[in-house]
Length: 69
Length: 256
Image 1: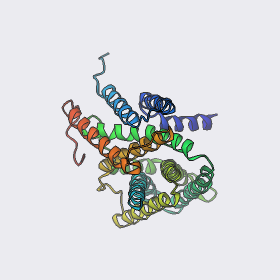
Image 2: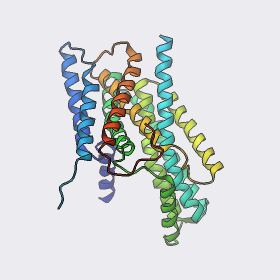
Image 3: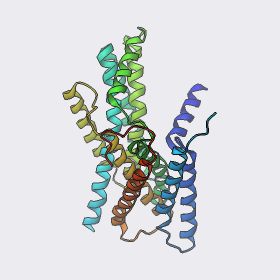
């Protein structure tokens, strides 16, 4: 059981890492790109812009001051 | 066309080399830390056993991925590379801007040595079990990232041999450098290389992910250079912006 947990944790850390928003944002940007290209829109610009927006938001969350307990 | 191919190939080789070299520097620190304190035989057997597992993984998964349609493969590999590469880039930006401590190979080496010295003697199958398991796990975990990068780069570009060559060159360079230095490669600008690797992984992931989703890049493979340039400029701008909000002392040797 602990091996399974370790295995799952490894993949979680590998793909999701410190901020789940990054993986979720990448998935959403890719799905949007897929949908647009299927509707004859060559949305080559969407993924780079989406990646930058996700990166900015993730960094903003990382450096924001934590509330004092 | 030949120029376009060589641009993609050179970037792929450089990306595989740098990404694998960084992981191997960390793996070398583990092996050296344990080997110097507890002896080399069990440590090297552990490292070798992990190496065999990793080579078997590449040999099995690499050709198997060749049977998947290239569009689907690029979509999946691109998504994984993007998620993985953005983590590297995010950490590199936080380190370069002083919001996260720099990775210190010398400190990791000292910690590894202290743990190795404190561990109890446990002989199994004629091996120092601590040395064997620490070297095996260390090489396997760092190596899995190398395997992922090699397979991702090689399969999505259809040039597995080139990606394997990049990793093999990195292995030779890191092992020779480690042998000559007889210590951790703390003078390697690891944090700067991680920044570059984060940029390359993110750029390749973006390029292949979008292609897998059906995009036709203007300029075909040459647009990969544009993607790298775009992410580089944005990342440098983010480092500058975040430095104004720095919470840690100014990073030393953190290029970028």
